[in-house]
Figure (cartoon, rainbow, N blue to C red):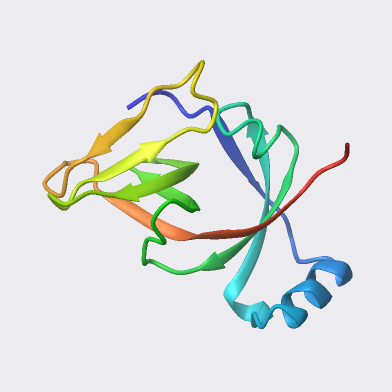
Length: 123
């Protein structure tokens, strides 16, 4: 697997605005956590320094952006379930990063931490 190209920087808590957003969208704040992205693998969707709100869940929402861990590394990637049970791990920055296919019997088991439900950044 490639070296991590999008690091996750945990934040202590959700901001007041994020908590209000979560309530409006039907999320319980206990099921959410916030991180800051560092890297370019998910650009332009998620730029370096973007704040992400993540809903804790282990199910894959096909074609959506998730926080995942494989081996000892964690990433933010778009996931696609395949018919053979494998999962395609996709970076939106296709010019610099290739897709990875994680097979069910892969020793670096794919662990889904959560679904990215909000991205915010300065323009």
